[in-house]
Length: 164
Figure 1 (tube, one colour):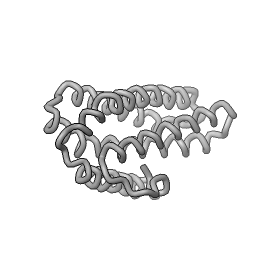
Figure 2 (tube, one colour):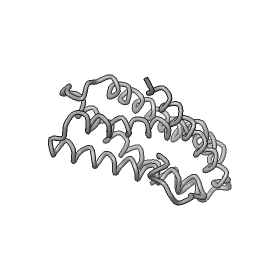
Figure 3 (tube, rainbow, N blue to C red):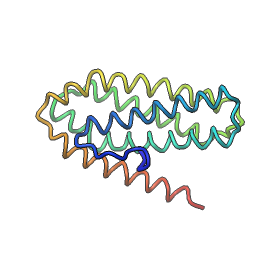
């Protein structure tokens, strides 16, 4: 989700989104390890905010580019509506994480709830939506380019807004 995590070019939207999912799963695992190891607040907060920013950019790209393409290619309103509803829940949790001090007892548990929600959402996308999109007539290469552009714009905007 960030330039340093993806060095190989990806030529289709499904592979690009799957790499994003892989990154986030890895970061959630790292966060769990930090909690188990009793890592300090700054380490946990830094990783949690990295996860939040990556998910924000990923969700924006899916909502602006991928989900409309899914609706057009598959005519699947219910599955996309459910995915967008899950994104709304993620945004709510991300807002909570961003507003909590990492020393707050709720910080780690809120990240854990976000992790569970994201893992379930990813499983549904990778198991249901992605296979159907691979079989569709959608231009997955063009979608990948559009997704990458939206994601990078959002990440740049987030970086600018975090500057003092």
